[in-house]
Length: 367
Image 1: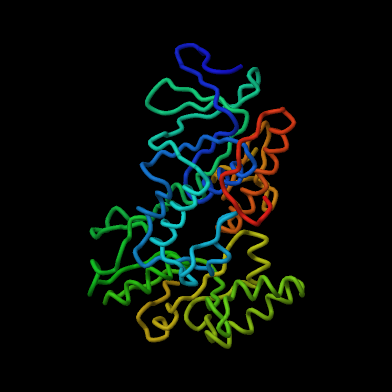
Image 2 (image 1 turned 90 degrees about the horizontal axis):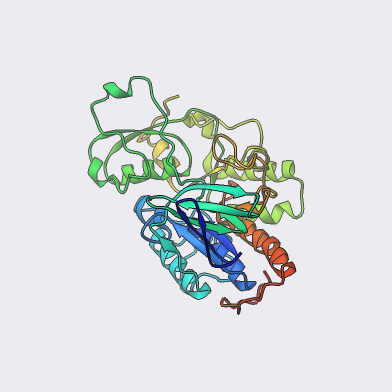
C-alpha cells in the first residue's frame, strides 16, 4: 500500500524504510547507518533541535568521560583539533555535522503519543500527539535513550525541606550555590562531577552514597583507564583484569573505603557485565573528599523502560521493532546497536526488492 490511506478519522501515511524515534546520538547513528546502506528513515524528535538533552539538560562543565575515540558515532570521526575529552558544546557541534554529513533531517516537534504493531498492515502504526496524523512503517527504531526521563526519587520528609531541590538535568553551575551547604544525593559520574563543581565555586557540598561503588581514576599512567581495560580484556580474563585495575586504582587513589566509598565485592568490569553499573571515573573529586570538603552520608522493555534482553543482543525485538542506546554502555554501545540494526534492516529491505538510495556518508569503515 503506497501513499495515504484512511483509517477511521485519522490520516494514515506510509513512510518508506524505518521510523526512528529520537534525534539524540543514538537516533542519529541509526539513521546514518541506514542511510549509508541506502535505507531511508524518518526521524521523529519531540524537541525543537537534535541532541536536545545534551544542549539543555546537562551541566556546564560536562565533558565526555571517555576518550573521544570511544565516543565517535559510526562512520565519522571527531574533527581534528578536538581535545581528548571533548566538551558538551563540542559534542553537540559534532552531532550537527554528523547529521548534515549523513543527510539526516529530523522532524522536530513530533511527539509520539502511541506506537503499536498493526498485524493486518504488517507495519508499525505511530500516532503523533496533538493531531490525527498516523504514520505507518515496516520498522520502528526506539532511540529515546536511557536518560530521556529524569529519575526523581521520593524522599520521606522532602516536602518539609524549604530549600530548592534541583535534579542534575536542571543543574548548570555551582556559582549560584557559593557559600551554601548543598546535599548531593548519588555517587555516579554526575554526582561526583557536580560535587567537584560545587567545591570549585565555593559551596560546601556533602555527598550521600547509598550503595557500594567502584571509583577508578580516569587515567592510569597517562592513559585512559577504559582504554587500558579494553586492551587487557583481549589478553586476560575479566577477574584478572579487575585485579589489575583495582591494584592500580589503590595506588592512584588510596583506600576509598576510608572516605566512605566502600567497594563492591565483585570487580568493576565483572559488575558492569552483570548489572550494567559503570565504575565512577574520578576527575578530581576525591581530592576534595580527602581535605574534608565533601562528606559521606552513609517483552522488549522492562517496567523501568530498559530492554529485557541484555547487551549485546537487546537491540532487536519482534515484528521489526528495534532499540538503540539502551545497553547501559554509553555511546560505544549505541554505536554497536546502530550498526547491528542497520545491517538487519538492510537485509530485509534488500530482500523486498526496494531500490537503494545513494550512500550519503562516506567512510573507510564498512557498516
